[in-house]
Length: 283
View 1: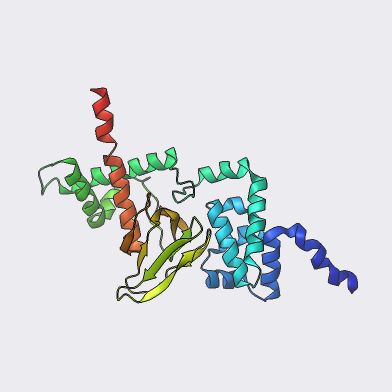
View 2: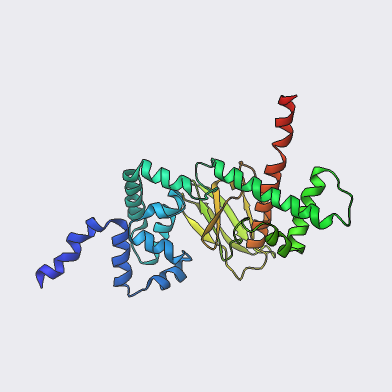
């Protein structure tokens, strides 16, 4: 009996952060599904955390933040878990950085867009522009560049079937699900509120801390002075940061539809802007 009682204590350090969380979950008689429902963290990420496979998560910030949230849900010291995860990632070193660079993670703390992301955005924007011009050809005379971008957005909304049939390998289906914000720095002040001004959450978030926007909130909005330090995911899929630069933003709609629309508009702008600077040097 004494040997069996001492077994968990001897195995605990060897199991790392994931093992501690798994044992705490089992001690609380909770399933992975129950933890996922309580924390709003996708089950696949919880499974990766329990296996100490932190490189499977979108970025270092998500690995630390999700692990801390998991720890709090099963009454484990979240700071100790965060320290263990950081140590694990430090040991992974270059292997982790290489793994992370392959993932679509525009909300990475380094905020350095990969060439793959740039090509993907350019290709998606081109498809939208071509689809828009084709749809509006019978109604409008072809105009300037900005007019084409607007037409492309409307065509994508009005005739989704034409866009899909014309290019079988465009962008994957848009993410859906709950909107989650993750702080990329310590001391990021943010306030979430609904359309009536009723406060949902207001605080200074720590690095890795997450906030899930309530799915039943009416017209949720955000106010912050550090939008570049807030990464966003929808249904567990990262879509980037609230902004690329530090500025005060207020009354920004943070529903999934609004955020995806803003991301699409950003991709179109990114495609349009480089055209002029590249033409001038050649002349």
